Length: 533
Image (cartoon, rainbow, N blue to C red; front, side):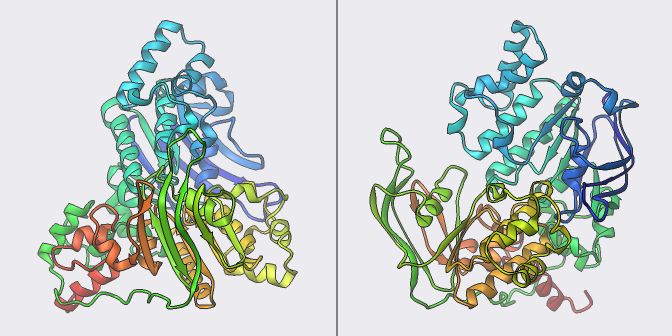
């Protein structure tokens, strides 16, 4: 039947001073699509980990988790694996074999599926997900999007009735993320698979869901349809994470049905047109300081026989500047940061840093943690207790200082890793996907913090799939494609000039406000044209 139910679940981590989950109850009806969302650190990952006994965290627990009416702890792990599929946030954490076809077959082999049936299921999943063109590749050659799609296909080869996904698009570029979520939607609509999805990209996930649950501080803050949730959360700080068209709909007083996509947002704007001569909000001005770090015609490959990843790429970042690099998975964005940090060397071209102290935040922040608590990790930077406490408060970490860093949510780990680096006082800070796992409210606080640091002279170079963040906070931006940086324009000129690498706000409002990037710009323009709004 495939019914998963949580009844009055409360959970506290060891040494935790407050519960990570508080009296949470939910029921996944067969064939439903449920979206789980909420601020970073609200308990989403902790909750999902209770849905597989092999992933359940240690700590104090009350309440029950039931699969088809039976306590999950009493269901054999083999049966759990067959009935409940789980896709993790980090694609690399789930891949265990060297070849794509080995990965597709791995779970089935562990279940003891007959070889003839195994080959049929592997072939079916490869065809369903379009994996057949890279069926024989090594898994370490795949892009992030391909790895996550492979994880999904390998899980679905076991034909689970329930699919649980923990922020599966956190590492993916916008195009790959959209493709992945559409694949999940197909599984739900075409195969009837029950889906529970935890996700920060609400602009893509919210329209797919039948039911939405918002967690806040470990408890259910609201539950209902997307429209019901949008109305209930309109005055909550978490509403900043909602899609631009829904925020506009709320600002206009909820006229008509809730628009779920850009097309619905444009229909709303046709009925409530913005004032066309509205000036865009001020964009961060480009610093005019000296060049802090640069790449000059660099060429790079990971192996002498491998193809070039970067081909004559040049980049200049100025003192006090926040420079954003965007591009698809596998385009070489992380390689650029490796060259700037000195972790990799080009075989042609130059890296010029003028002796500045350069520190890098890795894409997986867990590599920075070997201590048993966040406090110890911050103290290992060499900073005094007062500086550690100030940084913890600045990055909203004071409540988790005594927690093991590996027990934190993805967003909390990002903030803790950033705190470790900032305490070391770099002159150039390299950030690899810094906002993944962060909720909208903290992304705003994080962006403001970066601007303050830039004003003090810090140079920040970030590579990111978070287009709304880059469009709001970057001074300049460029697209990495075919081994080269195709442009280095002001952020507004760059993002308003693109159709895919731009914001949903710009896609929605472009016929009326072609220079708008932020929801506030469109809302303000509509209010100026309709004073009663």
